[in-house]
Amino acid sequence: MENESFELEFILNGESKNIRVKHYWTLAEVLRSQEGLTGTKLCCEEGECGACTVIVDGKSVTSCIVLAPEVQGSNIVTIEGLSQDGEIDPVQEAFIEEGAVQCGYCIPGMVMSAKNLLDENDSPDEEEIKEALGGNICRCAGYYRIICAVQSAAQKYKEKVKVL
Amino acid sequence: MSEFLYHVPNNLDDLFSTIKKHGSSAALLAGGTDLLIHLKVGKIAPQHVIDIKHVKELYEKITFCSNGMTIGALTTLINITKHPDVQKLYPALSESARKVGSKQIRNRGTLVGNICNASPAADTAPALLIYNAEVTIVGMNSRRTIPFESFIKGPGKTDLKEGEIVESLFFPFPPANSTSNFVKLARREGADLTIVGTATLAASNYETRIALCAVAPIPFRACSAEYVLNQGGYNQQNIDKALEKVVHNANPISDLRATKEYRLAMVEVITRKSLENSLKILTN
Image 1 (tube, one colour):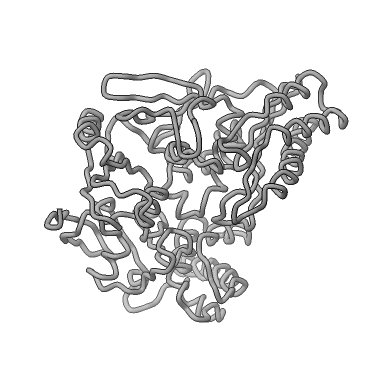
Image 2 (image 1 turned 45 degrees about the vertical axis):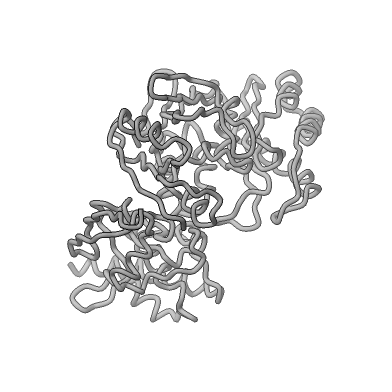
C-alpha cells in the first residue's frame, strides 16, 4: 500500500497543478509540505480551530480534515493567493490597519473565513460576522479588533467596486 | 493517520461492489467532518475509504413534492440553512443545522452523515423526530424506508446493515397552523457540542411534538409530555406538568461538558424556552 499514489489535478491560487499524493494525505499536508504554502497553519488538526481554513470551490473549509484526493478538479485559494498584482487584499489591509493581529497564528484562517463571508455577503452585520468566524479560534482573544477589521474590509470592498 | 486506499465510485453499482469487496475494512466518506477526526485519533483504522460524493444516483439538491420535502445523501448542512423554504416550513431543521459545528464544518458536512454517526448529541436529530422524518435505505438489491425514530439504535449505532447506505430523508409537511423551533444549550455559540438540545412543534389544535438530544443514549420524543399537551392544551399548569414528564424521560450522563444533574435541570429550562418560542409565534 505504501507505493500507491493518487494523481491529483487541481487549481491552486490560479495555477494548474498535477501532482502525486498519498491516498491518506490531507489537503493541509499537501499545501504545506508539497506546495510549500506554509501560510495555511496547522494547530488542532481536527477541524475545531480554523487555523487551516482555505477556500475550495468558493467554500471555506478546514483543510486538516479534507483528504487530498477529495479536491480532485477543485479550485483552491489559500492565504498566499489573495494578493493580486503585488497588492494585498482589502481584508488583509483592514486587519493591519485595525491592529487585528496579535501573535498572528490564527490570522491566515481568520482572513480566509472573512474573505469567504464578504464574497457571499457584502454588508454583514456583527452577528453574521460572528457566525462566519465562529469556527476560527484566536487564543490571544483579539476578537473585537478582528470583527472591526471585517467591518472595515466590507467598506473597502464597496469603495473598490465604486472605483471600478 | 493510518494508511488506506481512497476509492471514488461514480455510480451505485460501483459503490456497492466496492463495499462488498472490502467489507468491514472500508469506511464511507461524504463530508468527512466526523470520519477524518475518527481516522486521525485512531478510533477507526480502515484499509479503504470510499468517497460517495461522485455517485451519480446520490444527490445534493433539496426537492419538494405535494406531501413533503426530500433531502439527498449529499445535501450539505450549509445548503439546508440557506434554503428559504426549509427556513419557512421546517424552522427547527434549519436552526439545528445552523448549530452544527462551524461554517467550515457546515460547508462540508451532510445532514445524512450527521444522523448516520448516531451521536446522542446530534443537533439535527430532534428536528427529524418532530417532523416524523423517514429514512430511505438502499443496498445492492434492496430498498426500504423506515421512520427516523427507529433508525438510531444506540450511541454510534444505526439500523444500517452491512452494505447498506442512506439514500435520502423525507420530511412530510408539518401539520396546518403549527410552528416549530430548536433551542440548543452549549458552553459557547460556535463549534461546541450540545449540553441539551430541544425541538418542539406546537399547533393551534394542541398537536404537540417534543424531542431532545444529548440527554439520553439516543435522541428521543417525549411522548408522555406530548400527550399531556395534546389533551389539555397550552395553559401554564399543563405546560408545567408536561415539563415534569420530559425531565422524567431524560436519562443524561455526566461528561466534560456538564454533569447529569445540570443537564436534568436544563432539560426543563431549554424545553420550556423552545415551547414558549413556539407558542409566542402561534398566538401571533
